[in-house]
Length: 441
Image (cartoon, rainbow, N blue to C red; front, top):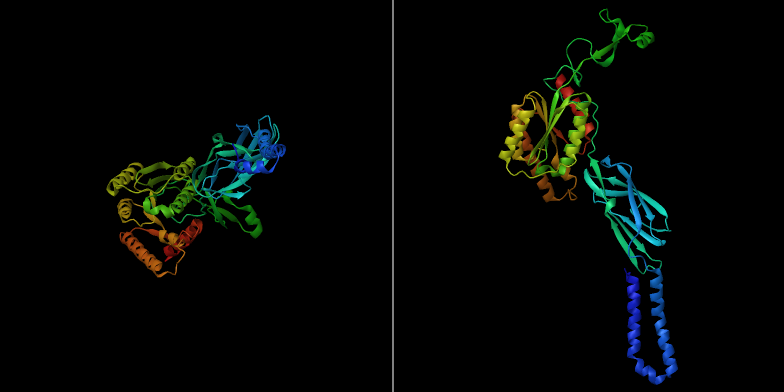
């Protein structure tokens, strides 16, 4: 394929040649015949040199280059860095003076180190590689590639290019979630086995709770000898019995949760990871226009199932709220017991969805709401916060949201408001202290 440079040069030469032909009659009258032939040959020299140079430096019509891609991993969390290695080998019978390689990246991936566009050269049979790092900024399933290769000649007058679709590679970016140290939520109906809930039953437990002074009723096997030697008194180990509970998480993924859906997903995974760590049974219901559910399970694979589902979850518009209400009620009543701890994760800004949640929560024996503030989240992206119109709209939205929350609390439902600008682990830690203070009053 001709480059723009050679096209311009050839066009200029032909323009000069045509102008020379147009003025040939006047030139013939002024000069002799021998000089006329010499000047004609001299005018053909630049065109001949250009054509000969192009013939000897013309690139092959087919790009004979082997391109392969290597990734350090195919599955990673949000904001993690991924190293990409591109290997190129010259399979042709001629060296490549100018080799241009460009690796296509999706919009959800940003370049952090190196470059996905290089210019190099290859000898016959030579192999080279280049690497760069990208940051995966958004959850989802993305595709790296294809790779575009362009071979240029030495004069940069022609080139051949090829698209390598076989280098396309799919990666999975899972949501990032925080690990919680302690859970402020408690259930009214726990089961007697290992778990995160303190038991009031007497007896030896399974988890170490601390050291206290020895009493005559304590077993000799529970004596803490290092503490006894240090304080010259008998000390004994104290244990706590922990109990597990069933947990149901209900995620609101309808249209009005678009701007805050990622924060809701992180909260779901954080809570699930904590409860599964203590062998609790955890289930999940994702409410979109359709209703997806995961039955209760204490397996560590449960968190992986949640993650694979939540990678692809997008907020959808509800077609019929009455049909959706029946679907949600049937799913929850059929697969989840009435006494399990039910946590609704929703911004509670949709009145129709609030009616559905209220109906389900009042029928459950132990339920609460985790309410991320969608208005605070969207207000962070407003540039002109001092504008009177923006302030008025913001205050109106806050008032409408406060009215909806008041309606929910009027029915005796428990709500915990979460400002998403605060990390979820810090919010849960503060929530624990608030609950403890209220419990002592």
